View (tube, rainbow, N blue to C red):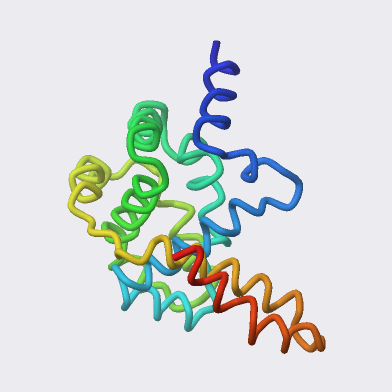
Length: 183
C-alpha cells in the first residue's frame, strides 16, 4: 500500500527528478530554497553565505524525503499532508519556519562545521517544534517562485555553455525569447 501511495505521489507531483541519478529536481528545489531563505531570512542567508553554506548541503532530508527522514513520524506525516495539499510551497514554508525558529542558534555558529551540525541537530525533540506549523502557516513566500525556477535553468544553460562560441549566439537570441515564453 505505501509503495503504491508513494508511486502515485511521484507521478501526480512530477517528482521523478528527485530520485534519478544526478538529482536534477533536488538541485532545482535547493536553488529555490536558497532564494526563499535569502528573501525571508536575509541575516541568516548572509551568515550562511559568509561560511560557504548552501541549502543543498543540509536540506537533502528535507526536500527528498519531505522531512520523513528528518522528523519523527507524526511531524513528518503533517509535512507530507501539507505537501500533498500545497506542493513545493509547503516545503519552502516549513523549511523557512524551521530555520526561523533556530535562527538565533544558527547565527551563533561561527564556523562551517558548527552551522551544519546545528542544522543537523534541529530535528531533535525541541519545544520550538510545537509551533513549527503555526510559524510555517504565517511565512510569506516571495512572489518570484516561478522566476527562481527560470533563473535556475538559465544558470544551468550558462554554466554548460560558458566560454563557447555558441553561448554568444544563445545569449543574444534564445534566452530572451525563452524567458518571455516561460514568464
